[in-house]
Amino acid sequence: ASAEAMKALEAKLESEQKVTADLQASLEAEKEAAVALQSQVAELQTTKEGEDEAVAELQKSLEAEREVSADLKKSVGEMEEEKAKNSQRNEQWSMKVNALVSQVQLLQTDLDEANAKLAEAGPALVPVPLNDESEGKVKELEAQ
Image 1 (cartoon, helix red, strand yellow):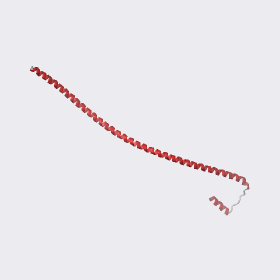
Image 2 (cartoon, rainbow, N blue to C red):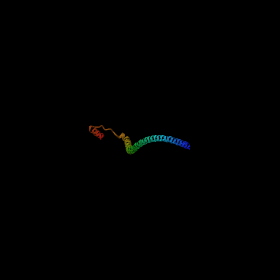
Image 3 (spheres, one colour):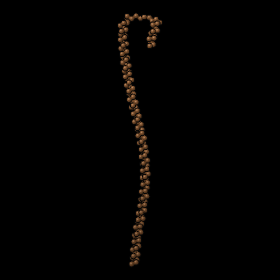
Image 4 (cartoon, rainbow, N blue to C red):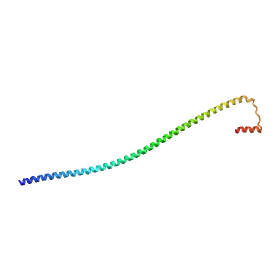
């Protein structure tokens, strides 16, 4: 009976050693999986850090673009103000030019009337030679 008990104990021991070996193999596989997971976590952290840096750069770029946009809006506003001022100046000059054109037209009308009267009175006019005194007065009038 003792030999059978011994065989049973040996079989049980062998079975427990096999279970222990299986558990150790399983534990080793778990350790390898844990190392692989840690490696993946490290890669993900590196990737996340890179993405965080990229996001920070994009935010800086966006802020710079906003500043440029604000500057452009300000410049456009200033240009529109200048355009409005120029338009107002052009309108004032146009009014002045129109007034001068009207004055020239009136002067032309007066000149035409004076020429017509001169043409009517022309034959009755006799030229008078100028003496030194009259010539001086003509030059004085011309100077005015």
